[in-house]
Image (tube, rainbow, N blue to C red):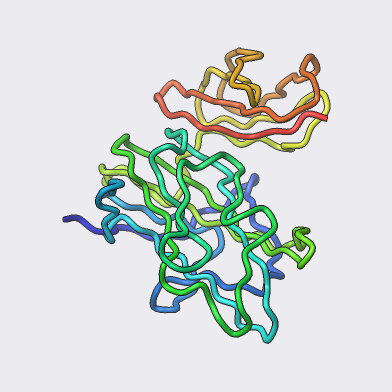
Length: 251
C-alpha cells in the first residue's frame, strides 16, 4: 500500500489567506510536530467507509497549551473536484465523532467551537480522509477559535489543505483549486481570479441554478446585481475538467 508522498508548504500568492496568528490552539501531527499554516498535504491513496486506512488519513491533533479551556472548530472552506459526499472529517474528541457528508463552509464539530481542555488536547482520534477515487480531489480546512459565547475570535484562522492525487509526478505544493473569489460577502459584484477558462454556475441553497456564464482565465468582475439577498454556491468548471466550489453571501 502506498503512503503519503509529499507534505509541503503552499506557495502563498497575492490572494493568500494567510492571517496574523493570535490563536491559542496548535495543530500538530501525532508526534506533536506543528503543521505550517497554509500547508498542503498530498496523498496518493484513498480510503473507503468500510476501511478508512491509516495511509489515507491526515491526522490533526488539536492542542491547547494554555491554562484555560478554549473553543475550536474546523471549517471546510473549499472543495475541488468533489461535492463532499465521499470524505470524512473526524474532529472534537474520542473515536466516533466523525462527520460526513461534508458541507461547503460547514463547521465541525459545531459552529460555536468544541471545548479543548486546559493544557490538553482532543487526543489522537481526529483526522481528515478522502474516500473518493476521483483524481485529483482537494479540501481546504480553516481552523478558528471561539469565545464562550460562540463568537469567532478575530485573527485565529489556520489553514491546511488535504489533497488526494494518484499521479504524483505532476504534483507540486500549490493548490489545485482553479478559482479565487474575493470578497465573499458582496452586494452587486465580486472579483474572480481564474487559473484557466471556466464555465460558471451560481446555485441557490435550494439547489437551483440562478445564473450561468463563461469566464476567461485571469481576473474578472462577476456581476451579481440581479440576485436576491441570500447564500449561494459558485461552481467553476475549468477547461481541464477540474471543478472548484466557493460560497458567497449576497447582501
